[in-house]
Image (tube, rainbow, N blue to C red):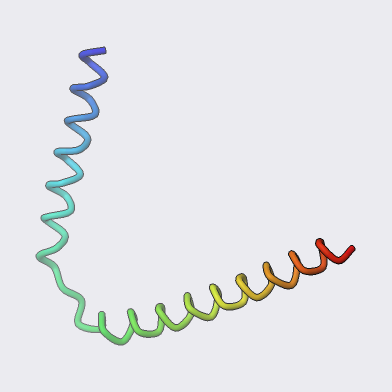
Length: 62
């Protein structure tokens, strides 16, 4: 059990250090790409929500 706890703690520390190391690097085209990704994800969510509502309505009706 102690080995498992130490292993989890080690993974958390390594992940934290890797995250901090990556935050220092910036992407020059980040603003444009994040905007297009947000638009695509919003469209996907809209389609899934509408499809789910239609599917639920059809399930309830039939």
